[in-house]
Structure formats: C-alpha cells, structure tokens
Image (cartoon, rainbow, N blue to C red; front, side, top):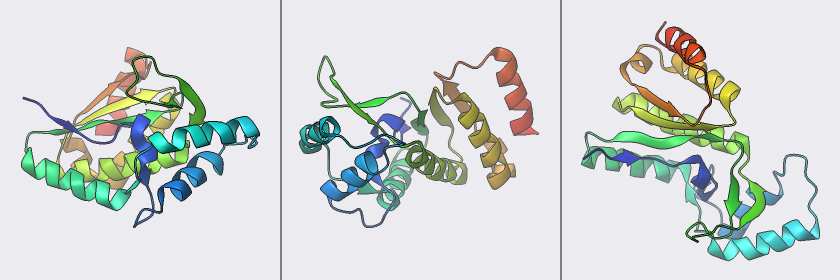
Length: 183
C-alpha cells in the first residue's frame, strides 16, 4: 500500500513558521487578519474569524511538522511526500469535515504556503522521496518553485519524481519544465 505523508496547502494555516508555535489565537489572528493581502479588516471579517477560531486546531510549528514527517518516513520507507503544494484559490471552511462546507472569507497567505512547501520539499529531496504536488491557480509560481528547487538541491533533485496535478499546464509546457528540471 502506497502512503502519502505531508501537509496539503488547504491545511498549511495549521502550521506556524515560529518555534515553538505561538498560542492559537495569536497564530491565526496574525496569519489570517494581519496578512490580509490588501484587504481591510471590517466587522464581517472579525465576526467570521471569531466563528472560525474555535474549530481550528492548536498550531504546530514547522520544525515539529518536519520532525513528524521524518519519523513517518522512517516508519513507512516506501511513502512519498504528499499531497503538498500551492493553492491560491482555496478559502478556509468554517468546518472542514462538514458535508456541505461553508467557506470563510480567508485564504492562506501565499508566502506562508510557499515556506511550508519548500521545507517539505527539502526533506523529500534529502530522504529521496517522490512528491505528490497540488498546484491550483499557481502555475507560474509552481514553475518558479520547481526551477528554484532544482538550483537549491542540485543533483539530488534529479533523483526524485514529482506527480504534479490540478495545475492546468499544457503537455508542451510540462515537457519544457521536465527538460529544464532535469537539465
């Protein structure tokens, strides 16, 4: 049985870039209200935040995420990293487990997603694990990320495979990416 281990971009807001992770209220308030990407904080957003906060888990530090991933990869030596990635269109639901999800006005800041995905990729390259990569409304950023990871990781980068999906790339564009990434 094939296992996938990693943090999907839809759940990347659960991860704190600080270690140790700050208190729950501070983490989510900073991430969702203070990083609003040009949106003003109005009463509707504050009300939505207060409604959302009780359903969110305590944040986990990226350091702890990577420790857990490493431990899981040890336990499952054939597992791949995934599904990880970037998603610029996803909005956080009030209740992710609800059959019919009501969406909040909040998206996960793209810089936050990028930091988490780069750290996970670094571990995958180190441990020589293939990657299942979700890319929604992020084509240009995904191509840039893959090119940057090739430069950062060099030869070890060529030893892993990437299953890229939800990205909307044409077959020609993907062939061009493969040539450049294996270059």
